[in-house]
Length: 189
Image (cartoon, helix red, strand yellow):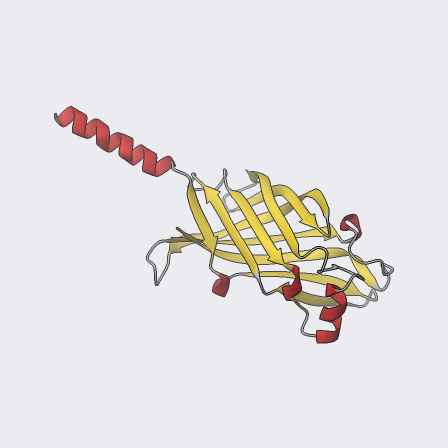
């Protein structure tokens, strides 16, 4: 009987250890931001105020993680209402026709102890293309309120807005290269 109990404990323990776990972004401690060069002179920063982000992983080091992000494009904010309205219009994002930006990772590879390359499909303005971004695992701990595991990630990288058909203005007016800067604190469900 003891052998059966021990075997059951091992099976339950290994299932718990290797089970896929879902993690969801704590929006109060997460942000999706970007920067773009204006008139080849200065960088304009912005962010998206509404988004959903989660990941699924069964490994402690997140090397098997699948990240999924959905952004509400109408929530764009550059701290300038007139510019935000223009970005939402058909001159740029065309929110009426393309209300969401989506990203789903397809692979993740560890480059050192805390750094990864995450590759996935980005859909923006009706165009889907593979992108590779830098991902840093800031740390893992326990939530102060939930006492459940939490993990912090930072994502950086660049992409070409014209590759996705965003904005027909000349690159000298609004740069082509968009810098992505996102931070996420994910809580285990």
